[in-house]
Image 1 (tube, helix red, strand yellow):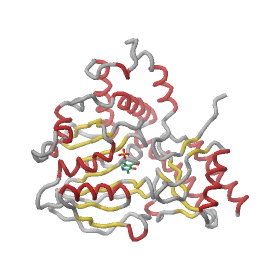
Image 2 (cartoon, protein in one colour):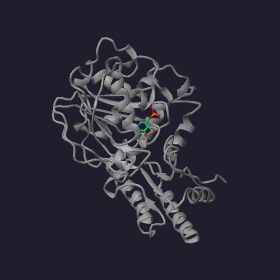
Image 3 (cartoon, protein in one colour):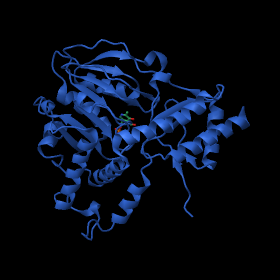
Image 4 (cartoon, protein in one colour):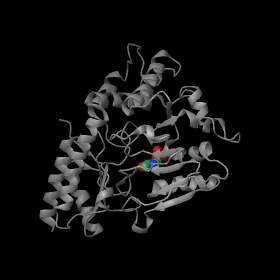
Length: 360
Ligand SMILES: Cc1ncc(COP(=O)(O)O)c(C=O)c1O
């Protein structure tokens, strides 16, 4: 019998079982072609349809108008840290960047390589355990950049500032498609697929039309959004397989009721774990401020690193995998993306309760 594993890795991460099953069923013969989708030309009508449907589905799930383009690019979210300034940075109008941790820091580094930025607020003073609230935006910044969810520390932005005419750019890599937001308030959203959508290898970029084509002439062809927008994300060979899995994953999400339905379940799942932490008489210490808690990455500590290691090790006996915190910060982290079933979270809660009883 197949062993049932609950996978709490932060990314690459668990995918919905029905998505994997469908991919398996279609692996050797896609749509009666007698070939795998991995083997088909990206210029074929079969792949063309995958790409078109995937783009349409991103738009539909986010309630976006035709003013937005959807791209499936290679290079990971890390390439977007650089592509954003390359395409949006304007001389004399430094971008505003909100520093909420490692990933924002990378956006800052790339903006600085390009010409500079203003870090308008930072939660570095408390080791990125909260999302800063009071900050002033520069009305003439070339763009405002934020990270909606800090995967490593487990903080999540609940509200987004009103940036007026300044384009709002958001790295949504680790909470993409996990909740409902007013997505048309954003001008550019990017997300590595490997957390909440599909396998590693594709990055979704959603960009509003009026931001396309503002790059300087020094920017290389592949690094211009316009290149990819003009060719419907097919300027060169796109990440075919990963885009296909993302499409299956979005079909599944739509069947579940879309972002509204999944947000409801995500809130329920997160509450189960946070309740165990809060009711543990400080055996488990939640890492983040309560008002900044992520629905996707629940981070906590035990009294010593040794006890944390023991906890992660014993969790394996319960088939709970991937609970160690990010290597840069230690501690514990349960990543409970869309595809983590409620049942997995319930087993984790039972395990944590049992572990506490035998180790306090
Ligand atoms: C919020 C966030 N942004 C960016 C990245 C970098 O993504 P990639 O590895 O696709 O470059 C990660 C990776 O974990 C992330 O969590």
